[in-house]
Length: 313
Image 1 (tube, rainbow, N blue to C red):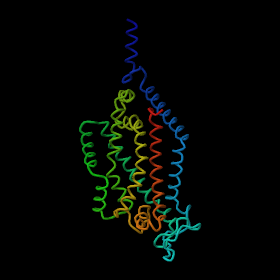
Image 2 (cartoon, rainbow, N blue to C red):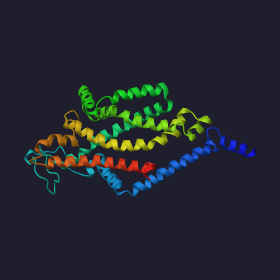
Image 3 (tube, rainbow, N blue to C red):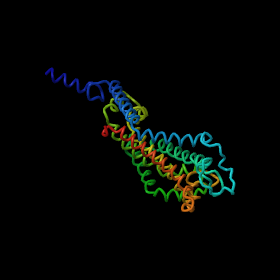
Image 4 (spheres, rainbow, N blue to C red):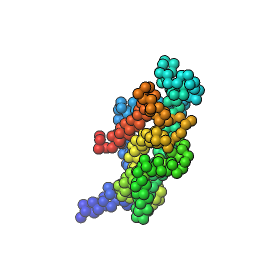
């Protein structure tokens, strides 16, 4: 009889806790496990040469975008038609474009629009899409129904066709409008990722323990559930940064993105694709920078996924 009583006490020890521990101890244990996961992931990433090379490349491109004068003293708008399409040299490593402008300085200054658009659009989908996914997964019911149907509407729009239609209707192509269009067409994906993570986390013991001691919905969502969903969101956000860099170049190449006199890798590719056979370097240099940036973001995302997923350990 005493054994049965003791077992019953152990099972029902603390409200919402299945092992007899208090909610505070359960929450503390959960935080320790999360800290251990991130610490293990950090050690794995630091030892991963592919990840470190990708980070180094993105760091270089980021400094080009933020501080172009660290990389070139040439004015990209200082042109001389007598130097049109001159080949690369020691003084001008990328040669000159069709207007006689220093092509290397164009490549350096062209990094800024691509990075600004990618970062702005990614920040938007993380904040808005993450919030929508959090609300849909936590509350369920009609809230989940309304948000899910809204996501389905945007999912039904083909990405490239939707971007072309929106930018054509706006009739004003700049960094802000392109970032806005990319955000509108992409936020449902991250919302669905967060929704799934929240649904799998909201009924866990440590969440129920916190709810039993009177934690508010806001505290439950942002202190107990959201940290458990950050890992997949971080992986997706890293990969989508590269996708947005490529999307900007694609839209610009199609003539509905950035327009001259703006400078971007997409404009460089669009303006010189017809010269590929005669002067291939006019196309290879911006394409190389674009491919390297997109590939680096993808490799970083893959490494983060492997490091943060316990199944890969």
